[in-house]
Image 1: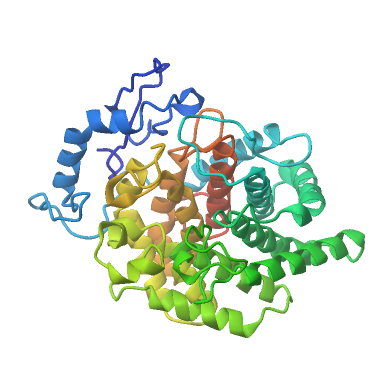
Image 2: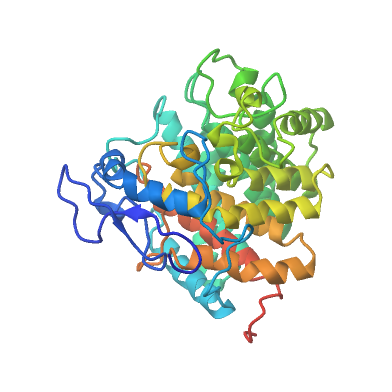
Length: 448
């Protein structure tokens, strides 16, 4: 244990022989992911997890976590409840340096067409794709995330990459559609492109580019409303029905929170967001919220609120966009609940970290998946700015440390192996998190 957080299991930094997965405990400063970066061969997921199962169960027992099936396993004697303190919180200089290195990676790894990410198989367990349209949706969604991160960081060295990325979105954004009846990754595309455009359009002068961006934002807003389920939420799969308007069973809490945040940003930028759609979305999101502040994973989980995936350790990542969405729309919860959600994430950050790099979705403790890590921290960083000054001062440096210490030697971040998209989306979310935190004055160090 180091920096107050338990290290996750991962292979050694050396090449991993095919068919053999090694699992060692690393300090959190050295931790990167189970995928051993680009040398991931798939064996370090399930096999590596089995090799380390006894070690991990011992760690969980020592931390007082519930077992994967949801049963209690006790708490270490004398271990205080509440937020684990960090021995080495990040300084402003460390966060600034991490942003500089991340921006350098992003500009070096932009595709010639202005996008980020590639259709490249990184292992045997890449996420389900209905058709190639799913890859188009991923590429454009990740490009929007990268553009938004560049806009948030607002550094001169990222301006050229931002301009190329924005041109890619204006050119290819209108062509993104639904892959098939079951796979709806385009919901992420529409949400992230709309969010970026809502942030970018106010910075543009009147002219052709602003008109094109406005037209694309209006079109993606229209398509998002089509994908709202009959119960009010949004999801990215619909395996049961596959209709033009997805079935209510397919809605997820975090997808709904993501869409509602984007809709609020669009409204703030002057777009006409139908009140009925927002009202239905908020009502559905409240219906999936558990009294302890967590959120059920999807619509059917309302009947299993105490399943492992819905406990605080399983819901710690999903809480961030959901709390933020309710707060931005003037609904419950207030700033106090936003802070409690962030503290829940930091308290159980080791659970999110253990899931990093595991190739099977939801195979980690509390059914966590690695791709929730930087996604959760990005929305938590935005929520942090809405807290009272004393809470920002208490949380900003520990939050920044959960990002800076996981940066790779090349300047990128990664939390989940997924085709050739993983470095780009994780780096974008990490940069967005740090960029927002660096806007805050309450760092508590002597940095300018």
